[in-house]
Image 1 (cartoon, rainbow, N blue to C red):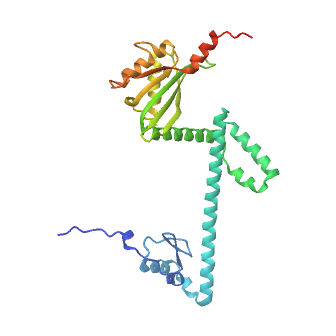
Image 2 (cartoon, helix red, strand yellow):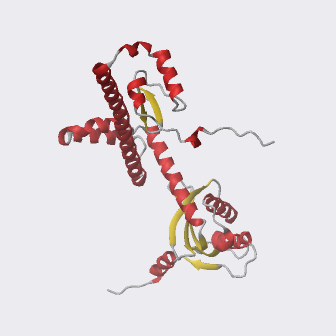
Image 3 (cartoon, rainbow, N blue to C red):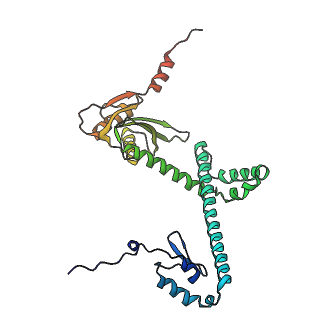
Amino acid sequence: MAANRKRKVDNENRQFNDDWTVQYCFVQQHTNVICLLCHSTVAVAKVSNIKRHYETKHRDFHNVVGDERTAQIESLRRSLNRQQNIFSKHTADFSVTCEVSYEISLIIAKSGRPFTDGDFVKQCVITSSEKLCLEAVRKLQMVTLNRMKVQRRISHLSADVTRQLADKAANFVYFSLAADESTDFNSTAQLLVFVRGVSSSFDITEDLIGMGSMKDQATASALFKETVRLCSSVSLDFTKLVSVATDVALAMTGESNGLVALLMKHRGKQNRQLVKLHCIIHQQNLAVKNLVFRH
């Protein structure tokens, strides 16, 4: 015996009958069938469902006939369209103001300004608009730039940049790293790791993977762990690593326990040798110290 199959309404291709608008005060909006009198919807566009709803909840409207019925139905239809247009306009305005909020948050992040500057920027923009473009004031007032909102916007942007880099890294055939460690004004060691990768279609990507703070001393082991953590955040495959550029600090280039040596061990046995490069910028700085210019 064949198994019973459940009917799927989506596969029945039911069509809305325009006569139902006059008879039962229903219209079709996109995929929904809506009652003009109470704005309710029916699950399935069947005449029995529509008729049942009309006779159960709007029996009194049956007394409205002729031209008066047609006029009221048209009025109800226009009212429904106006309401939907208001919602559509509000959605469009929200989309624009949200985009503006992200753009300003990006500028704040790039300039290194505190998150609290968002409210200050908003006040400046609104004041300027009141003098230059009065019709834009209402939309600008909808832009949210408080401290917490700016912080979330920047976090979202950062996560999106990381995701984009991870998507590109998935297509790398080979890649190289550049690592540099420096101490900030709080005497905290900061490690910067850059990547340069190439795909099978010879698309080259150069980007900053991230910055990691050394909680303790910047030992080779600590630098290695932080480098692996940063590279893992964008899903880099270390078997595709071909070169590493660093300065000549012992923690970076130590023969057995330097960062490069630890990366070679982490990379495993490969047919190709890992190329070690001395950063050209450091070489220039060292060369300048030994140059003597005669004027």
